[in-house]
Image 1 (cartoon, helix red, strand yellow):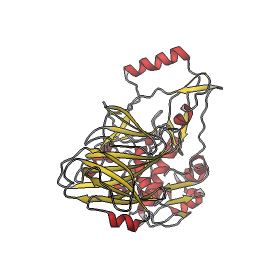
Image 2 (cartoon, rainbow, N blue to C red):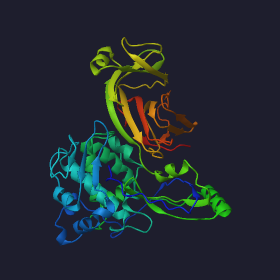
Image 3 (tube, rainbow, N blue to C red):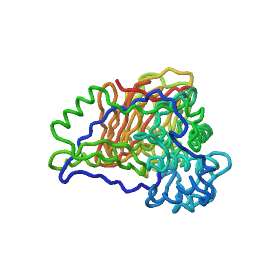
Image 4 (cartoon, one colour):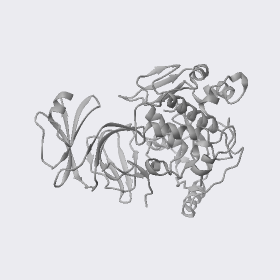
Amino acid sequence: MIAIPKSTRSWLAPLAFAVLIPWSVPAAASTFVDGEFATYSQNIWGADPTDGPPASILKARFFDLFTAGAEFGYPFPGGAVMDFSSADAMLTFLPQVGAPAALNSSLTDPTTTSAGVFGGQVVALDLNIGLSDLGALEHPAGVSFGDLVLTGYSGTLAGLNGHTVREYYQIVDAALGGGFEPFSIIDLAGQTNAINSSFGGGFVSDYAQQHYELPNVVPEPSTWVLVLAALGGLGISGLRLRRVAGRPARTWCAALVLGAAAGLLPLWAHAHEALLIKPLAQAKVTALPEGTLFWRIENFASVAQAKAAAGPWSLVVEAADKVWLFTLGPGGSASPGAAKVAEVGPIPRVTAQEYLLRINDVRGSPGSVTPVHSHPGSEAFYVLGGEQSIRSARGVLKVHPGQAEAGQGADMAMQVSSSGTEDLHALVMFVVDANRPFSVPATVP
């Protein structure tokens, strides 16, 4: 993941509170020209800094981007990370060669890893995004490289459409550490290499013309009404460009009125951070149980006991220092020797030739969110800690610790967020069509 976070500086008027006025940022059709943006491949980033940019920029600005050192990967149980303590360590690491793969262990200042070329590509992408955000690489006023919107993908990569380059980085960073894999690492390695070279040295590529759009940052008229009403009634106290979770992000806020609003500030401070998602277990089946479906959630004393009790529609995972058995089937059942935790349902059925059953681990600090998306099947939730909100056309559903909810059916647009004051930790159950993209961008009406 992006490096160990740079200090997050939030400027507010004394005893003021922030009123956030969000608006959507759709993409605008774009044609790019040479000199508009600049990016570099891992080979160029890893050159001798005495030869000049961009390696000299990395050498000079490393601690502006990574105040306490850089970290990449998935820093949760079952994941792995690689840390770099200095620009020299990172320059020694770049470039990397070898077959793309995930990290198989956590390392400090490595010179090589199990990730092969993929590890170097992820580091280079972080540098292209972060140093563009810092103004060290060319970009138009108001739009840095990480803000560009991906488009024009099809087939197994269709799920990338609508995500920003910054959001794409979060996908590949987690995949590097063994987390979140809606796409194969082979596919991600190819796309990451193309993205890093898309504005090579300031020259626009065919890839950039085909797969990027500028974000449209002009609010809708209805949003301007809200903005003007807020500003007219209260007045602007501050406007701040800040860094979220180690990655610069543009956040517009009005710092207004006396009295700090407890609860708003933690959410504001993390407003654009992404939830971290890691698959814990999955299986493909050719048929689903008959009748009304429920997910049965149980705990066991050991993995061996859970596996002994598992059936054809069961998944065994370890999370939060416990052994879990998730079983899809009729309601009212129980496994011998199990401690029943919850029963979630009814689960909307989906019709397919092959089904994917999956359990994901979801974590995030307050305010972190997913992009708006949909799945080709059902999604159900069990919250271990924090508060989870699911926004859809039906409204906002909040799930608290110890609660389970059946969630949405197939192709229903939603956005999931950590909406409490403590970090979210949830386990998410899926029954989806195995032959369709696991997740695709969507729009909540």
